[in-house]
Amino acid sequence: MFESLPQHFRDHELSADVRTLLILRKSMEKGLVNTLGDMYVVLKGIIVKSPKEMGPFATAFYAYFLDITIQKDQSLDNAVERSKAFQEWLDNLSDEERYKEDNDMQDFINKFLDEVHLTTYDIERVIKGEDILKNDDPNMKDENEQTDFDSNPKVSKMADYSQLSLDELRKRMEQVAQQQKHKHQGGSHWIGQYGNSPYGNSGAAKGGIRVGGAGGGKMARAVVGNPQFYPVDKKKLLKDDNMDAALASLKGIEEETAEVILDIPKTINQGLKEGGLFLPYEKEKVSQKMQVLLLIDNGGYSMYPYVQSVRKLFSKMKTRFAHDLKVHYFHNTIYGGVYEDAARRKYIPISKLLSLDKNYSVFIVGDAAMAPYELDDSSQRDWKRLKDKFKRIGWLNPMAERAWAHTLTTQWLKQIIPMYTLTPDGIEKAVQKMNRERKVLR
Image 1 (cartoon, rainbow, N blue to C red):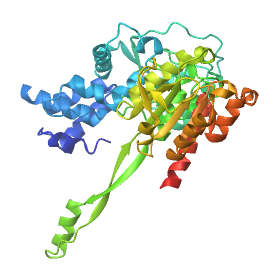
Image 2 (cartoon, helix red, strand yellow):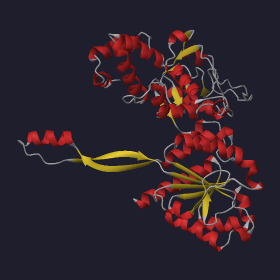
Image 3 (tube, one colour):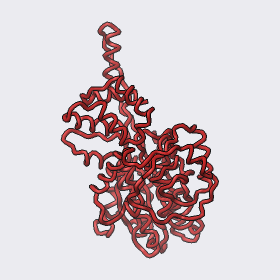
Image 4 (cartoon, one colour):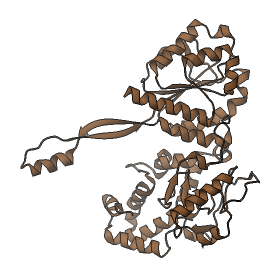
């Protein structure tokens, strides 16, 4: 564990070696490291020898434990805001906290850093996980829905589950998941947030199983991403309590691209072995890219009931796809183009969409229901052009699938573009189909 840590800190011109690891492990064995904040305090005491080393130490710590890279002349706040750990943390906030009008980004960054630096000294006491599970019934019924979610919960008790086997925790979690029907916060029983339950995220449980969330400094022994452990109905229309499951499905649109580059270390090492005959060796540099195009039907009476949920999903998607998401709007259908703004005033021709990279994943959101004369030959031709250009394309319909057959235009559009329900299950099916198309294109 942490074998690469000394070299990582040496790369930041700090003194660290095998003794650093030995002292750290002894500290962990004595129960001094229970949170990421504890890890920060202990390592600071071991490594930092003078005030001038505090800056490099903080930079190295954030990079190693949270994958937050602070570039030269970049502030910590700016690096945090751009990091994946912070974006995932934002995604797991309650909607009430995430979308409060008086919140600004600095407030979120400060709260995130407060949680990162939470130490055992900030928590009243540490209790044994064995004692919690001994008095807990994994088959307890989830009869009362929790409605009073605290936007800034304070964890007062740390639980240590490191002495329990991972198999035992997994079995108990599956038992709890079978009974759980609602979202929970705090406590030591349910799969939720901000408590000391052995399964959940953003709480105070050492040696447990993280379910969702951005992580807590490599303290969990296992990570579960399977949505079966979330108490949501994936077949119901998109709404607040199943939105995270929909976002989880969208992770599947990430695409790895490989670029062949010169492997300099291998070229040099092999050249020395061959007595100075340096032959070039190549390797693949794998990078992630994400390109998403959203076309939204945001007008008309029939779409009105779904606007709020759809906007929340798109707001979260904008956070996750900050640099790769393009959003355009239309009303009922497209007529030679779409709009850049929700008010549908800034018109752009369809040729601009068709000039985009063919590898974009395209999601169209709308009920596809309109008067037959609206979906004329010209409009149908535009949809076909989009389908021919973008092989990874799917239509997300908020209407129940059984109602599609009753609308002629829905049937027409369904023949042109693959159509799915606007549910977590429908989004997952759309992403799976796009993944299959990706393999064909390769």
